[in-house]
Amino acid sequence: MADLTQTVLGVDWQSPVLLASGTCGYGEEYAELIPLDRIGGLVTKAVSLEPRMGNPPHRVAETPGGMINAIGLQNVGLSAFIRDKLPWLRENLSRARVLINVVGHTERDFVEVVAGLDDQSGFIGFEINVSCPNVKDGTLFGADPEALAKLVAALRLATERPLVVKLTPNVPDIGLYARICEQNGADGLSAINTFPGMLIDIDRRRPVIGNVSGGVSGPAILPMGVYLAWRARQATSLPIIGIGGIRSGSDALQYILAGATLIQVGTALFVDPQVAIQIHQEIDDYCERNRVTLRQLVGALEIPGDPA
Amino acid sequence: MSTPIRQWVEVRSIRQAAQETWWMVLHAPEIAAAAVPGQFLMVGLGLTQVGAPFLPRPFSVGWRDRATGSVGLLIREFGAGTRRLARLRHGDQLLLLGPLGRGFHIPADRPIVCVGGGVGLAPFLFLAAETRDSAAEVRLLYGERTAERVFDPALIAELTGVEPSVYTEDGSIGRHGLVLDGIDVSDDPVLLGCGPTLMLNALEKFARERGSDLQVSVEEHMGCGIGTCQGCVVRGVDDTWLKSCTEGPVFGAGELAWPI
Image (cartoon, rainbow over all chains, first blue to last red):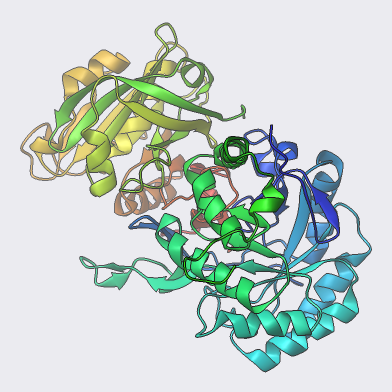
């Protein structure tokens, strides 16, 4: 077994593989299918201050090499999350790390959710969702430099726990947003959220997705995700969690070589719940074969012609 | 509900049962042993390929044989994903997750009328085969648009031991008309429905007007099959969204907001 351990966001990780927000519920749903305590951890479904209903169906559809979704952040809300969901995570996970994904309509919403969770146990920190393309105001913060700066600064005052900001790919320069997060006190970045997209049923001449548009994920977006994670890496020294289209160890290693310390697997879980364990094993095999530790691989991309 | 099983399984046989319609038998002993009528499986080709079907597709358990560890699926070609599945052959591998969801609630002391439209027939093949000895009486009504689409009635009888009443909209085989025309509620049966949305809406109206008990199996685009992605919702009677994967796919008609 190779050494895949790291210290990131102030805690030790036994594996770089996390389950992505929105694809693993609140952990419990996959407990019988995935040995969660053998992977790095998971990011919960988004938690908002009040419960959200979500969008009308269809909410998901297959696209070439992936899928499109517009769930609309349906979730139980802060109080029910603390009462019904967090205890399971606290009592059943010992080695897997938990980040709570947080979403809000306003800066105050975000702050109240983070503040409301801060003194609870069962998780290490927050992933701030400023990049959901499937609700009206989903990228209000993620694509507005000033609003993002204010939000991250306000959240920094609300918690000392790790704050990871999940970036949208739908901006001209992701590096700008990465730097804003760093300057205002974020501890890490998740790169990237889904790409906005649309699918049309030509027989009915209607959008397939009830919300009209949605977020595109899956293997089709892998090269864009790797590129944007690499761009974010150039712009900041914050740890980066690579996400977008990962379905194998070699996909994950592309993100890691580009500079990600951790990775998230999402859509691929729907195809095969065992993929998270398989990715961990394939990274392990690669490190064994190349006689390296995971830490030595992070950002180890070599670009011919670049001065070393 | 039992723990879902994730398993690569082998196609034992596949035969064409009607136009663009296939009967596939898989070797899946654990799933065969655990399934109850109305439950479904997520059926896919795994992650080594990204062509359709990339996401697994939900299929009703269409039949099972515990002795041989077999599970039957009724596959109709609707798009590129189901076309690919229909081209699989003996010995090919499929990735299954299941059995999933809530099945039909089958009373022991009342007649059961199964109303299947198109591939909505599938759960009733399983249900009729399982309950013919225990239920008071199982009647199987099956509707299609045209004769070419009708799943071989002899195979239905062989799988279930029940002779189906077949209806076609053009009258080219079986009785002429809609499957609803054949429902007799005089002995206060429990109605079970599975099929196109238009049929389910008509069936719900029919049942409501006659005060009959009705359960329906719904279909919605699905992501995970186990309740995490919340992709497969249908509208509940109290205006909340219900997940067809874990809260369904079988619902009492009174749980849903009609028309669906």
